[in-house]
Amino acid sequence: MFEEAQYLAPVTRRADGGVEVELSRSHPGFADDEYRERRNHIAELALNHTRGDPIPEVEYTDEEHEVWRRVSRELTVSHAQYAVADYLEGTARLGLPTDRIPQLEEVGSALRPLTSFRYLPAAGLVPLRDFYGSLADSYFHATQYIRHHSVPLYTPEPDVVHEVIGHANMLAADRFADLYRVAGEAARRVETRDALEFVSKVFWFTLEFGVMREDGALKAYGAGILSSYGEIREFRTVDIRRLDLLAMGTMQYDITHYQDILYAADSMTHLEDLVGTFWATCTDDSIAALTATTKTP
Image 1 (cartoon, helix red, strand yellow):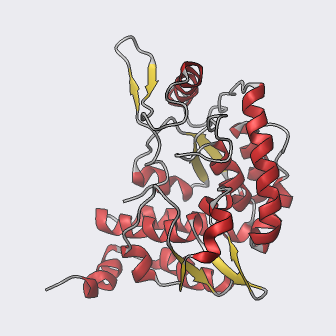
Image 2 (spheres, rainbow, N blue to C red):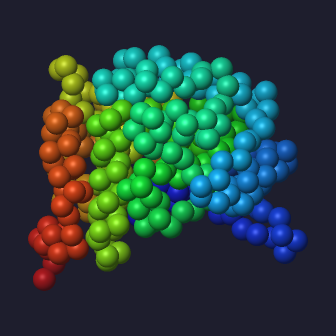
């Protein structure tokens, strides 16, 4: 199953104490030694970070800033047409720079007076319960590297574009920030792996890949759609179904391509009433009872 950090490349410590990000051969940066060394350095900064300390700054290159400028420009146009009002409100409140990559510490400092959220740097895979549970404390684990410059409008893994343009703009909106927190509280409350995975799958089909009907049109609010140059132009063409907790929490899906099934909320209030209430009240027993009908005797 998916978790936000799961499609990050594995990160290991070498025998000499250095850090190695294990990119797959299909990764756009695999054959770029300079890019790979940058990834190793950025991952090491995250591994050496202690919660409560300022997040180490990454010295981004001009080439990396240019990738951010290109993606920001393209996504801004798409957001005006396809993003829900609360996301656009969060974007305006946060005021992210479009001419350079912001530092995670900078983004967190801007978020904190708005909704109390802050960032934690992630080198690679974050354990499922830690990733979601931290949301309850208004912390969001995020990567700091940016996609390879050869394909500025594509990334095989969540980079700083996804973490900041996708998630930070949502975290700057009060109603979305509350949903992130209550999802984290649910992850803390449940004890079984099955229940935790159910909670995370509902998160996937809402705060990662959620869509919503607004002013007579289908709009996007999920960070995975709103940070993807391609997917934001395609989401209206897939199989759109109404929000359904059981279906979302048990759906199998492939994270390596555009999602072919999405679940639409009728409104922000519908999302809060159904999904928010589920996260606020779910237990291992209630999730087991909900899923019991899907299991064969």
